[in-house]
Length: 287
Image (cartoon, rainbow, N blue to C red; front, side, top):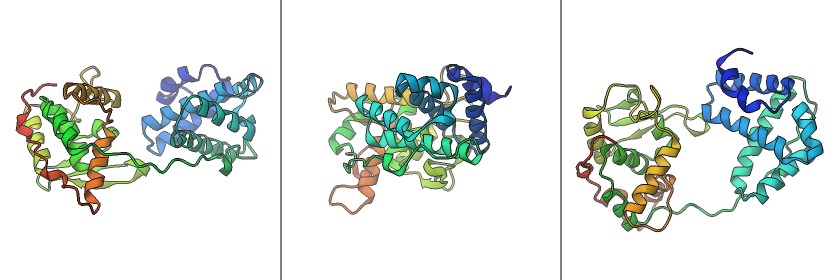
């Protein structure tokens, strides 16, 4: 199978048999034609490799040769290994969802007779909601951001509720400056939505656009031509600015999205727009 999917993913499938590689590559090609993201395809490959590694050794040889021989007991061994390694129930359930979809594909193709991922395999995740950043920490965090680009990145999460992956891949064509909106295509759950720009986001956006080199993405990668920033880069920026602000509590970029969610629900806490986050306070235009 000489195609981009094969060239991109076959090296990561090298430990599987040739027949298994062909099964997986055909499935990935199907997902690509349905416009699943590269992150999803990569997650499928990683999860299948993890399944093969985490079953007992005698079963490893079987699954390496033919994933069509996967049993419910293999899935249980995979779950147990994931729990021992400290993975959260929600993460394990995500992996199970990827495996279930792959094996459903093999069943539809007539290569399996039973689905090895059963309903009882699903774990009950804890009902603890993520905590948003307190107002004082939020102001301290933004106060230390002296880059227009970086401030815009985090304001899009805080004000517009964008996910990290959505900010990374945000294209200029998705922004309607006149309407003050951003269109997110095929977000989580393959759902399209439109979000509105707040005044400080519009301000930072105008400054960044006036100085940004032409290209399809708002935040192009400094290392790779014609591609965008990656999640790891934004995570690193978050850690750096938290440290610069002297904040010892660890917050992820997703906490900014939860801050917005906590303010749009009925609450006695002050709304986000009461926090002074002046976009013009950023001194550096370049990253």
